[in-house]
Image (cartoon, rainbow, N blue to C red; front, side, top):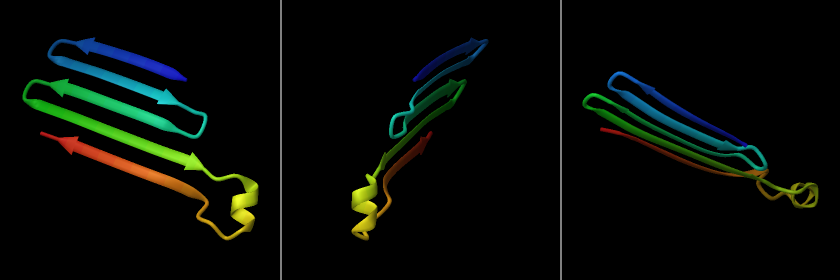
Length: 65
């Protein structure tokens, strides 16, 4: 688990990460640029892998303005 906060001049950024099965969030504001990034990854158990199910669920979101 990690949380980072950055403020420098006209740039503000926030980053958060949880490492269990991977959760991430990044947010950035810099002048006229705003960005948001999201990642989610749920690992499957070994039993589910043996049953030929997908190894991981993944979700991505990238927004930039």
